Image 1 (cartoon, helix red, strand yellow):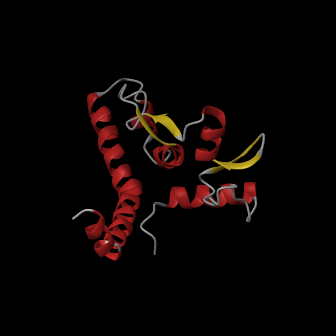
Image 2 (cartoon, helix red, strand yellow):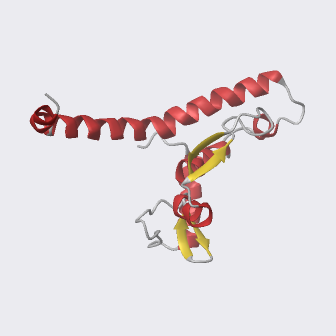
Image 3 (cartoon, one colour):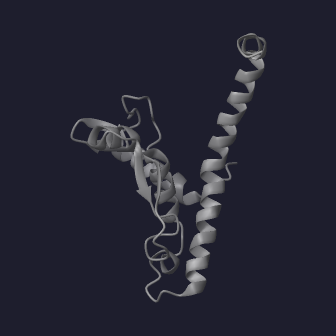
Length: 146
């Protein structure tokens, strides 16, 4: 059983039905949460950002605009995943109409939890690949950098 909350699973299924079961970006991305129909066909958020701005980055407000002015540049596909995760937050926390400090703090904590759930597994996977590459190329690297 997946540890993923039910919300993203249902949203993925709805988007998959909307986009079609074989939908994918030219880059090979197939996650329905990252795909959208654009003027050039089906694109992931990263490819669309590159096409429109020349950069794969977008600005994200981790705690939501209502809770903090902090915005960070992140990969557009990660931005799509983080934004999707915010749909699972209580509306009052994300919108925080009354600017309640406890809701701001809750939003910051939720942003940290989303980071741990979404980005850390990707970072760990990349680091594992790097470690394996370093170990496989150990002797070659030693010859080049004695």
